[in-house]
Image 1 (cartoon, rainbow, N blue to C red):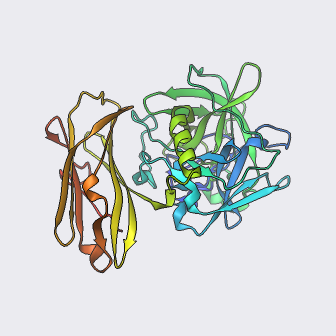
Image 2: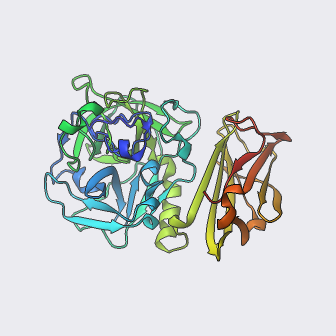
Length: 409
Protein backbone atom coordinates (compact mmCIF):
# COMPACT_ATOMS: atom_id res chain seq x y z
CA UNK A 1 0.00 0.00 0.00
CA UNK A 2 2.70 2.36 -0.92
CA UNK A 3 1.57 5.90 -1.26
CA UNK A 4 3.73 8.00 -3.55
CA UNK A 5 1.37 10.39 -5.23
CA UNK A 6 4.07 12.51 -6.73
CA UNK A 7 2.28 15.50 -5.34
CA UNK A 8 -0.77 15.15 -7.42
CA UNK A 9 0.79 13.59 -10.46
CA UNK A 10 -1.24 13.06 -13.60
CA UNK A 11 -3.82 10.31 -13.40
CA UNK A 12 -1.59 7.90 -15.24
CA UNK A 13 0.97 8.13 -12.45
CA UNK A 14 -1.43 8.46 -9.58
CA UNK A 15 -2.54 4.88 -9.98
CA UNK A 16 0.70 3.78 -8.47
CA UNK A 17 -0.23 4.82 -4.87
CA UNK A 18 0.19 2.12 -2.35
CA UNK A 19 -2.24 1.71 0.47
CA UNK A 20 0.22 0.90 3.13
CA UNK A 21 1.68 4.03 4.21
CA UNK A 22 -0.63 6.78 3.46
CA UNK A 23 2.18 8.64 1.82
CA UNK A 24 1.23 10.08 -1.48
CA UNK A 25 3.75 11.96 -3.52
CA UNK A 26 3.31 15.64 -3.32
CA UNK A 27 1.78 15.57 -6.72
CA UNK A 28 -1.78 14.31 -7.01
CA UNK A 29 -1.65 10.84 -8.44
CA UNK A 30 -4.86 9.38 -9.63
CA UNK A 31 -3.57 5.88 -9.04
CA UNK A 32 -1.66 5.17 -5.78
CA UNK A 33 -1.14 1.58 -3.92
CA UNK A 34 -0.40 0.49 -0.34
CA UNK A 35 3.19 -0.61 0.13
CA UNK A 36 4.22 -3.13 2.77
CA UNK A 37 0.60 -3.80 3.62
CA UNK A 38 -1.40 -6.93 4.22
CA UNK A 39 -4.18 -8.34 2.04
CA UNK A 40 -7.56 -7.55 3.55
CA UNK A 41 -9.87 -10.42 4.52
CA UNK A 42 -13.55 -10.47 3.57
CA UNK A 43 -14.73 -10.25 7.20
CA UNK A 44 -12.65 -7.14 7.84
CA UNK A 45 -14.66 -3.86 8.09
CA UNK A 46 -11.98 -2.29 5.87
CA UNK A 47 -12.94 -4.76 3.12
CA UNK A 48 -16.67 -4.15 3.44
CA UNK A 49 -16.31 -0.35 3.29
CA UNK A 50 -13.55 0.28 0.71
CA UNK A 51 -14.02 0.29 -3.08
CA UNK A 52 -11.85 0.36 -6.18
CA UNK A 53 -12.32 2.94 -8.94
CA UNK A 54 -11.52 1.18 -12.22
CA UNK A 55 -10.95 2.20 -15.81
CA UNK A 56 -10.43 -0.41 -18.52
CA UNK A 57 -10.31 -3.09 -15.84
CA UNK A 58 -7.55 -1.47 -13.78
CA UNK A 59 -7.78 0.39 -10.49
CA UNK A 60 -6.78 4.03 -10.85
CA UNK A 61 -8.02 5.18 -7.43
CA UNK A 62 -9.68 4.04 -4.23
CA UNK A 63 -12.71 5.29 -2.30
CA UNK A 64 -14.79 4.52 0.77
CA UNK A 65 -18.51 3.89 1.16
CA UNK A 66 -20.32 6.71 2.95
CA UNK A 67 -23.77 5.18 2.47
CA UNK A 68 -25.43 2.72 0.10
CA UNK A 69 -25.45 5.27 -2.75
CA UNK A 70 -22.41 7.46 -2.05
CA UNK A 71 -18.67 6.91 -2.50
CA UNK A 72 -16.15 9.44 -1.16
CA UNK A 73 -12.75 9.74 -2.84
CA UNK A 74 -10.16 12.40 -3.73
CA UNK A 75 -11.00 15.37 -5.95
CA UNK A 76 -7.99 14.65 -8.16
CA UNK A 77 -9.41 11.19 -8.87
CA UNK A 78 -12.66 12.51 -10.37
CA UNK A 79 -11.79 16.03 -11.55
CA UNK A 80 -11.04 14.82 -15.10
CA UNK A 81 -13.40 11.85 -15.14
CA UNK A 82 -15.74 13.46 -17.69
CA UNK A 83 -13.13 12.96 -20.41
CA UNK A 84 -13.63 9.19 -20.17
CA UNK A 85 -16.60 7.38 -21.67
CA UNK A 86 -17.09 5.46 -18.43
CA UNK A 87 -15.45 4.19 -15.28
CA UNK A 88 -16.44 1.60 -12.69
CA UNK A 89 -16.90 1.37 -8.95
CA UNK A 90 -15.95 -2.18 -7.92
CA UNK A 91 -16.99 -3.76 -4.62
CA UNK A 92 -14.69 -6.56 -3.51
CA UNK A 93 -11.06 -7.38 -4.27
CA UNK A 94 -9.40 -9.49 -6.94
CA UNK A 95 -7.67 -11.59 -4.30
CA UNK A 96 -11.16 -12.59 -3.15
CA UNK A 97 -14.25 -12.25 -5.36
CA UNK A 98 -15.39 -9.10 -7.12
CA UNK A 99 -19.04 -9.25 -6.15
CA UNK A 100 -20.42 -6.13 -7.80
CA UNK A 101 -19.26 -3.61 -10.39
CA UNK A 102 -21.16 -0.42 -11.23
CA UNK A 103 -20.37 1.07 -14.65
CA UNK A 104 -20.81 4.84 -14.46
CA UNK A 105 -20.16 8.03 -16.40
CA UNK A 106 -18.52 11.25 -15.29
CA UNK A 107 -21.93 12.76 -14.58
CA UNK A 108 -22.03 10.65 -11.41
CA UNK A 109 -18.84 12.19 -9.98
CA UNK A 110 -18.09 15.62 -8.55
CA UNK A 111 -14.80 17.14 -7.38
CA UNK A 112 -14.82 19.82 -4.70
CA UNK A 113 -14.83 23.16 -6.59
CA UNK A 114 -12.21 24.51 -4.19
CA UNK A 115 -9.65 21.95 -5.33
CA UNK A 116 -7.18 23.59 -7.70
CA UNK A 117 -6.51 21.63 -10.90
CA UNK A 118 -3.36 23.71 -11.31
CA UNK A 119 -1.80 21.48 -8.63
CA UNK A 120 -1.85 18.50 -10.97
CA UNK A 121 1.72 17.62 -11.88
CA UNK A 122 3.28 20.03 -9.38
CA UNK A 123 6.13 18.80 -7.19
CA UNK A 124 6.48 21.87 -4.96
CA UNK A 125 3.26 21.74 -2.97
CA UNK A 126 3.63 22.86 0.63
CA UNK A 127 3.22 19.73 2.79
CA UNK A 128 1.60 21.91 5.48
CA UNK A 129 -0.49 24.47 3.55
CA UNK A 130 -2.20 27.17 5.56
CA UNK A 131 -5.35 27.08 3.47
CA UNK A 132 -7.45 24.06 2.50
CA UNK A 133 -6.48 22.04 -0.57
CA UNK A 134 -10.01 20.53 -0.66
CA UNK A 135 -8.86 17.29 -2.28
CA UNK A 136 -12.18 15.49 -1.83
CA UNK A 137 -14.81 14.28 -4.28
CA UNK A 138 -17.96 12.16 -4.37
CA UNK A 139 -19.55 9.56 -6.63
CA UNK A 140 -23.30 8.87 -6.53
CA UNK A 141 -24.57 5.43 -7.57
CA UNK A 142 -27.80 4.73 -9.47
CA UNK A 143 -28.68 1.83 -7.18
CA UNK A 144 -27.77 0.52 -3.75
CA UNK A 145 -24.41 -1.08 -3.05
CA UNK A 146 -24.45 -4.84 -2.35
CA UNK A 147 -26.04 -5.99 0.91
CA UNK A 148 -22.72 -7.15 2.36
CA UNK A 149 -21.24 -3.65 2.06
CA UNK A 150 -21.07 -1.98 5.49
CA UNK A 151 -20.31 1.77 5.50
CA UNK A 152 -18.19 3.10 8.33
CA UNK A 153 -19.04 6.56 9.72
CA UNK A 154 -16.98 9.71 9.37
CA UNK A 155 -15.73 10.62 12.83
CA UNK A 156 -17.39 13.70 14.29
CA UNK A 157 -15.34 16.86 14.70
CA UNK A 158 -13.37 16.83 17.93
CA UNK A 159 -9.89 16.20 19.21
CA UNK A 160 -7.95 13.46 17.46
CA UNK A 161 -4.69 12.60 19.15
CA UNK A 162 -1.34 12.73 17.40
CA UNK A 163 0.35 9.39 17.93
CA UNK A 164 -2.89 7.43 17.80
CA UNK A 165 -3.17 4.34 15.60
CA UNK A 166 -4.64 4.86 12.15
CA UNK A 167 -5.13 2.47 9.25
CA UNK A 168 -4.84 3.34 5.58
CA UNK A 169 -6.15 1.13 2.78
CA UNK A 170 -6.11 1.09 -1.00
CA UNK A 171 -5.91 -0.78 -4.28
CA UNK A 172 -2.67 0.81 -5.44
CA UNK A 173 0.85 -0.37 -6.21
CA UNK A 174 2.76 -2.49 -3.73
CA UNK A 175 6.29 -1.47 -4.73
CA UNK A 176 7.69 1.91 -3.66
CA UNK A 177 9.84 2.62 -6.70
CA UNK A 178 8.31 3.63 -10.06
CA UNK A 179 11.05 1.83 -12.01
CA UNK A 180 9.93 -1.45 -10.44
CA UNK A 181 6.27 -1.09 -11.37
CA UNK A 182 6.49 -3.93 -13.91
CA UNK A 183 7.42 -6.38 -11.16
CA UNK A 184 4.73 -5.41 -8.66
CA UNK A 185 1.51 -7.24 -7.98
CA UNK A 186 -1.29 -6.23 -10.35
CA UNK A 187 -3.63 -3.51 -9.16
CA UNK A 188 -7.00 -4.45 -7.74
CA UNK A 189 -5.82 -6.22 -4.58
CA UNK A 190 -7.05 -4.41 -1.46
CA UNK A 191 -4.32 -3.96 1.14
CA UNK A 192 -4.11 -2.10 4.43
CA UNK A 193 -1.42 -1.02 6.85
CA UNK A 194 -1.39 0.50 10.31
CA UNK A 195 0.64 3.51 11.33
CA UNK A 196 0.49 6.60 13.51
CA UNK A 197 -1.20 9.95 13.07
CA UNK A 198 1.81 12.27 13.16
CA UNK A 199 0.28 15.74 12.62
CA UNK A 200 -3.04 17.56 12.26
CA UNK A 201 -3.00 20.64 10.03
CA UNK A 202 -6.21 22.43 11.03
CA UNK A 203 -5.56 25.44 8.77
CA UNK A 204 -5.08 23.26 5.70
CA UNK A 205 -7.74 20.74 6.77
CA UNK A 206 -5.25 17.91 6.29
CA UNK A 207 -3.73 15.05 8.27
CA UNK A 208 -0.22 13.56 8.16
CA UNK A 209 0.42 9.82 8.42
CA UNK A 210 3.73 8.21 9.28
CA UNK A 211 4.88 4.59 8.98
CA UNK A 212 5.50 2.63 12.19
CA UNK A 213 9.09 2.08 13.29
CA UNK A 214 8.82 -1.67 12.75
CA UNK A 215 7.58 -1.21 9.17
CA UNK A 216 9.29 1.95 7.86
CA UNK A 217 8.61 1.13 4.18
CA UNK A 218 4.86 1.16 4.66
CA UNK A 219 3.08 3.87 2.72
CA UNK A 220 0.41 4.72 0.18
CA UNK A 221 1.27 4.63 -3.50
CA UNK A 222 -0.25 5.11 -6.94
CA UNK A 223 -3.78 3.76 -7.00
CA UNK A 224 -4.38 4.39 -3.29
CA UNK A 225 -5.51 7.98 -3.90
CA UNK A 226 -8.95 8.65 -2.48
CA UNK A 227 -8.70 5.71 -0.10
CA UNK A 228 -9.72 6.00 3.54
CA UNK A 229 -7.69 6.74 6.63
CA UNK A 230 -9.38 4.97 9.55
CA UNK A 231 -9.07 6.17 13.15
CA UNK A 232 -8.80 3.31 15.65
CA UNK A 233 -11.19 4.17 18.48
CA UNK A 234 -10.58 3.17 22.10
CA UNK A 235 -12.90 0.17 21.72
CA UNK A 236 -11.11 -0.99 18.56
CA UNK A 237 -13.86 0.12 16.16
CA UNK A 238 -13.02 2.21 13.09
CA UNK A 239 -14.20 5.62 11.94
CA UNK A 240 -13.05 7.53 8.85
CA UNK A 241 -11.03 10.70 9.31
CA UNK A 242 -9.06 11.09 6.07
CA UNK A 243 -8.86 10.65 2.31
CA UNK A 244 -5.53 9.79 0.69
CA UNK A 245 -4.27 12.87 -1.16
CA UNK A 246 -0.53 13.12 -1.82
CA UNK A 247 2.98 12.59 -0.53
CA UNK A 248 4.57 14.78 2.10
CA UNK A 249 7.89 14.60 0.31
CA UNK A 250 9.21 15.88 -3.00
CA UNK A 251 10.50 12.40 -3.70
CA UNK A 252 8.78 10.56 -6.51
CA UNK A 253 8.86 7.13 -4.91
CA UNK A 254 6.35 5.73 -2.42
CA UNK A 255 8.61 5.63 0.61
CA UNK A 256 7.57 8.79 2.40
CA UNK A 257 4.81 9.67 4.83
CA UNK A 258 1.55 10.84 3.32
CA UNK A 259 -0.88 13.75 3.41
CA UNK A 260 -4.60 13.11 3.78
CA UNK A 261 -7.59 15.40 3.40
CA UNK A 262 -9.38 15.74 6.75
CA UNK A 263 -12.74 14.50 5.50
CA UNK A 264 -14.41 15.47 8.80
CA UNK A 265 -14.09 19.10 7.71
CA UNK A 266 -16.00 18.46 4.47
CA UNK A 267 -19.05 16.56 5.71
CA UNK A 268 -21.47 19.42 5.02
CA UNK A 269 -20.25 19.83 1.44
CA UNK A 270 -20.50 16.07 0.89
CA UNK A 271 -24.03 15.86 2.33
CA UNK A 272 -25.35 18.85 0.38
CA UNK A 273 -23.91 17.86 -2.98
CA UNK A 274 -24.66 14.15 -2.86
CA UNK A 275 -28.31 15.02 -2.26
CA UNK A 276 -28.32 17.51 -5.13
CA UNK A 277 -26.78 15.00 -7.53
CA UNK A 278 -29.20 12.27 -6.45
CA UNK A 279 -32.19 14.58 -6.97
CA UNK A 280 -30.80 15.86 -10.32
CA UNK A 281 -30.62 19.42 -8.99
CA UNK A 282 -27.07 19.53 -10.29
CA UNK A 283 -25.35 17.58 -13.02
CA UNK A 284 -21.61 17.46 -12.24
CA UNK A 285 -20.78 16.88 -15.88
CA UNK A 286 -22.21 20.28 -16.79
CA UNK A 287 -19.92 22.32 -14.56
CA UNK A 288 -16.63 23.88 -15.63
CA UNK A 289 -13.98 25.51 -13.47
CA UNK A 290 -11.15 28.03 -13.86
CA UNK A 291 -8.70 28.51 -11.00
CA UNK A 292 -6.23 31.31 -10.21
CA UNK A 293 -3.92 32.30 -7.36
CA UNK A 294 -2.91 35.85 -6.49
CA UNK A 295 0.55 36.94 -5.38
CA UNK A 296 -0.81 37.03 -1.83
CA UNK A 297 -1.81 33.37 -2.05
CA UNK A 298 -5.54 34.13 -2.36
CA UNK A 299 -7.48 31.51 -4.31
CA UNK A 300 -9.92 32.60 -7.02
CA UNK A 301 -12.33 30.11 -8.59
CA UNK A 302 -14.84 30.59 -11.40
CA UNK A 303 -17.49 27.86 -11.57
CA UNK A 304 -19.87 27.94 -14.53
CA UNK A 305 -22.21 25.99 -16.78
CA UNK A 306 -22.44 26.15 -20.57
CA UNK A 307 -25.04 25.00 -23.04
CA UNK A 308 -25.06 24.68 -26.82
CA UNK A 309 -26.66 27.48 -28.79
CA UNK A 310 -26.35 26.71 -32.49
CA UNK A 311 -22.72 27.28 -33.43
CA UNK A 312 -22.04 29.07 -30.15
CA UNK A 313 -22.18 28.46 -26.42
CA UNK A 314 -24.00 30.48 -23.78
CA UNK A 315 -23.43 30.48 -20.04
CA UNK A 316 -26.30 29.54 -17.74
CA UNK A 317 -24.67 30.16 -14.35
CA UNK A 318 -21.40 31.86 -13.43
CA UNK A 319 -20.18 31.91 -9.82
CA UNK A 320 -17.04 33.44 -8.33
CA UNK A 321 -15.44 32.21 -5.10
CA UNK A 322 -12.50 33.99 -3.48
CA UNK A 323 -10.93 32.35 -0.44
CA UNK A 324 -8.14 32.71 2.07
CA UNK A 325 -8.00 31.49 5.70
CA UNK A 326 -7.34 35.06 6.91
CA UNK A 327 -10.69 36.38 5.63
CA UNK A 328 -13.05 37.31 8.48
CA UNK A 329 -15.99 38.81 6.57
CA UNK A 330 -15.08 42.39 7.44
CA UNK A 331 -13.33 42.87 4.09
CA UNK A 332 -14.99 44.73 1.22
CA UNK A 333 -14.58 42.61 -1.88
CA UNK A 334 -15.64 43.47 -5.41
CA UNK A 335 -15.08 41.74 -8.75
CA UNK A 336 -15.49 42.54 -12.43
CA UNK A 337 -16.05 39.88 -15.07
CA UNK A 338 -15.43 40.92 -18.68
CA UNK A 339 -16.13 38.95 -21.83
CA UNK A 340 -15.38 40.14 -25.35
CA UNK A 341 -17.37 38.32 -28.04
CA UNK A 342 -19.11 40.49 -30.63
CA UNK A 343 -19.08 43.28 -28.06
CA UNK A 344 -18.10 43.76 -24.44
CA UNK A 345 -20.24 42.18 -21.74
CA UNK A 346 -19.16 43.26 -18.29
CA UNK A 347 -20.52 43.05 -14.76
CA UNK A 348 -19.18 44.47 -11.52
CA UNK A 349 -20.52 43.21 -8.21
CA UNK A 350 -19.86 42.95 -4.50
CA UNK A 351 -19.10 39.53 -3.05
CA UNK A 352 -20.80 38.19 0.07
CA UNK A 353 -18.98 36.42 2.90
CA UNK A 354 -19.95 32.73 3.05
CA UNK A 355 -17.91 31.72 6.10
CA UNK A 356 -14.82 29.52 6.32
CA UNK A 357 -12.63 32.23 4.76
CA UNK A 358 -14.66 32.42 1.52
CA UNK A 359 -16.49 35.18 -0.38
CA UNK A 360 -18.91 34.31 -3.16
CA UNK A 361 -21.17 35.93 -5.78
CA UNK A 362 -23.18 35.02 -8.86
CA UNK A 363 -22.79 37.03 -12.06
CA UNK A 364 -26.47 37.41 -12.98
CA UNK A 365 -25.73 39.37 -16.16
CA UNK A 366 -24.03 36.31 -17.65
CA UNK A 367 -27.11 34.08 -17.50
CA UNK A 368 -27.89 33.10 -21.13
CA UNK A 369 -25.02 35.24 -22.36
CA UNK A 370 -22.93 34.23 -25.38
CA UNK A 371 -19.46 33.44 -24.06
CA UNK A 372 -17.78 31.65 -26.95
CA UNK A 373 -18.34 31.16 -30.65
CA UNK A 374 -17.01 27.91 -32.10
CA UNK A 375 -15.63 29.62 -35.21
CA UNK A 376 -13.59 32.15 -33.24
CA UNK A 377 -13.14 30.67 -29.78
CA UNK A 378 -9.35 30.90 -29.87
CA UNK A 379 -9.44 34.68 -30.32
CA UNK A 380 -11.86 35.41 -27.50
CA UNK A 381 -10.67 37.40 -24.51
CA UNK A 382 -12.17 37.02 -21.06
CA UNK A 383 -10.93 38.02 -17.63
CA UNK A 384 -11.94 38.57 -14.03
CA UNK A 385 -10.51 41.24 -11.73
CA UNK A 386 -10.84 41.25 -7.93
CA UNK A 387 -10.38 44.09 -5.45
CA UNK A 388 -10.15 43.77 -1.68
CA UNK A 389 -10.64 46.96 0.33
CA UNK A 390 -9.94 48.89 -2.86
CA UNK A 391 -6.70 47.08 -3.71
CA UNK A 392 -6.54 44.99 -6.87
CA UNK A 393 -5.19 41.45 -6.66
CA UNK A 394 -2.38 40.47 -9.04
CA UNK A 395 -1.86 37.10 -10.71
CA UNK A 396 1.06 35.28 -9.06
CA UNK A 397 2.25 34.06 -12.46
CA UNK A 398 1.80 37.03 -14.80
CA UNK A 399 1.59 39.92 -12.35
CA UNK A 400 -1.46 41.20 -14.22
CA UNK A 401 -4.44 42.56 -12.28
CA UNK A 402 -6.73 40.84 -14.79
CA UNK A 403 -6.94 37.05 -14.46
CA UNK A 404 -7.37 35.98 -18.08
CA UNK A 405 -9.19 32.78 -19.08
CA UNK A 406 -11.48 31.30 -21.72
CA UNK A 407 -14.93 29.91 -21.10
CA UNK A 408 -14.34 27.51 -23.97
CA UNK A 409 -11.02 25.72 -24.22
